[in-house]
Every structure is written in structure tokens, then in C-alpha cells.
Image 1 (cartoon, chains in turn orange, blue):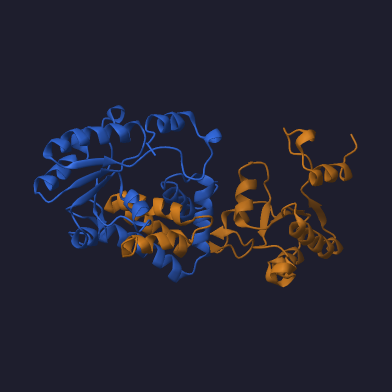
Image 2 (spheres, one colour):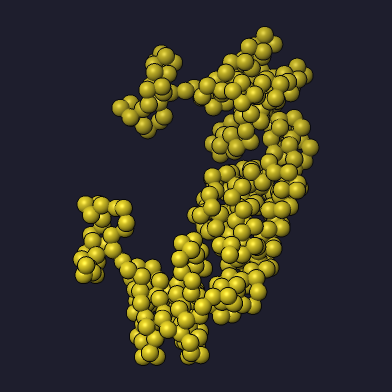
Length: 197
Length: 197
């Protein structure tokens, strides 16, 4: 006999496809669904279909959008473009309520090990945006890791000749942490990128 | 501006209702859904609705079932009934492929602190099953915690007078662990319930 009856097994299988969800967690989720009222389960299913149907990508910045052009691209000052790897990076930066410019979502970083080249991410689209003029600064906000650094370097080399200022988010010891407990790579980077006071 | 566009915010909200899922995890799940193909998202939503619609409770043992009477109650020897708190306990025991009797799912344990009394869980139904005759043994497999122990004790007191053998899963030091690292409560319990060799 199968351990799970078919409808439960099938739902567990679906939940297992979510990132970081193993069999045990998927089972807990499935049981939660069975515990829901009919209406709650319907709302859950509808939210999945609705998100899949309504969420498109902004044709300018590549971020998630319900419309052709996202509210950020529509309303904000386009002179500064912040380049990020993924839509979730936009969320993280927007939460600060500090940056008032626009974004450009690459949807990936250059990663030769995984076969991702410059043409597989939205670099061409970035250059096209800059080519239209009116851009003063490009802030490179890819992750401070090997791929993020390589991607930033690659973009910087292409953008600088266009006469646009290119900056990169500073790397160093996280605020509130202690030098003693900072990892070697970060600490050495903080030394190299030390700033004059 | 809202941080998330509406369809994403709504989906994150739905995922947040799953047990142990915070905003960050819900966001990861939502992004995964947006990354799915149309078909994959439809299958996910359909699995939720399907599970909610098809999963009922077996009218005998109370475990999840697609039919009125579950395959276990239909096929197995009814002389031994193993009493558990929840359907997931049945899964854990079935995985051992050792027990060949039937189950009785209480759907909870007695917990006065949370207002759960004996009449709020399926104790009456258990007594009715035993009352129909043919039951030789009741194995109490509630969790080895305060509520599980109290519930087991309560049931034992009711069942024993009916001339049915009542047993409880043994508690003690987990196999493969070390005495040095066993928590005090378990260790003291293992002393009290020590067995003659």
C-alpha cells in the first residue's frame, strides 16, 4: 500500500517543488490545506493562478509588473539606474525608502560554470536604455560574490565609454558586527577598499 | 508605493498561512510560482483543490481517506487497534512496514490548557469500536509528553474494564544516542521504566 492516498501524495509532490521544501515540510503544508475550509483552499489556488496570469515583466526595467511599464519606471527619475540580479533585490532596496531612481533587473549574472554568458542576461537591454540618453549614473548592485563582481566589471567596461558614471555598492564589514568575527575575505576586502576620512 | 504588486502580495499572503512560513519564505515560494510555466501553476492549483475535495475521513478510524472506509480498515486485521493523535502519526508508523493492525486517529489529545476535553477528540468513537467486539488489544501511541500521557492514561482507564489488553509504546533513550547526551527527563524515565534482562 502507498503511504499516502493519491490526492495527498499528489499535493505533497507539488509542494516539494517549492525551493527548500523536503517531503516532511511538504506533508505539513498538505495537511494544512486539508485542514482549510473549502473557501480558503479556493482562495489559495486562485492566488496561484492569478499571480501566474497577471504578473508580467516591465518592458523597460524587467522587474515584475502588472502593466507593460511598471509604476517605478513610469513615475521615477530615470537619470539613475540601479542594476540588480533579481526582482527580489529590488524589493530589498525599495524597503529602505532611500533610493528614488529606477532599476534594471538582469535576471541572472554571468556564470560560465553554469553556461550563463553576457547574452543570456539583460545586458543588451541596459545598453539600449543608456543609448536612448538621459542617464547620468549606473549603480551596480549585483551581489558581492565572484559572479556578481564579474558581471559588474563586465557591465562597467561597456558603460563607462558611453560617458556615464558607474558606481558599485560598497563592500566591507557589516554595520554592527565585530572585526574579530568578520570572515577573512570580507575583512581583507575592507582593507583594500578602505576610505580616507 | 507598495513593495509588492498586488498579485504577488496576495500570493505571498496565502503562502504565509502555511505552518512555519514567514514573509521571506513566502516570497521565495511566490517567485517560484511566477517562474513556473502556465501548466505547472495550473497543476499546483488543481492539486490543492483536488486534495481539499477528495480527502475525507474514514468513518471507522478517522484517518484521511478517499472513500467512506479507508483501505487499512477494509483490509487489515481489526483485533489490534493502534491509537494515535494525528494522521501523520499513521504515516510514521506505516513507514516501518511492521504493524499489520488497524488505527484509530483521535484528532487531538486532551489538553485542558487549550480547552480540549475528552469529548473533543475521538474517544467516544474508539469505545464504540471496541464495544462492537473482536478487539484484543489497544496500543496507545500518543506522544510521550504531558498531554499524550494524560490522554493515554484516560483511555486506558476506560478500555481496561472492557477486558481488552491495553499497551503503550515504550519510552526511553533513543537507539543510537548516548546516555551522556540524553536529556534528564528521558533518562529518568528510562530508569523508572527499566526492563529486566
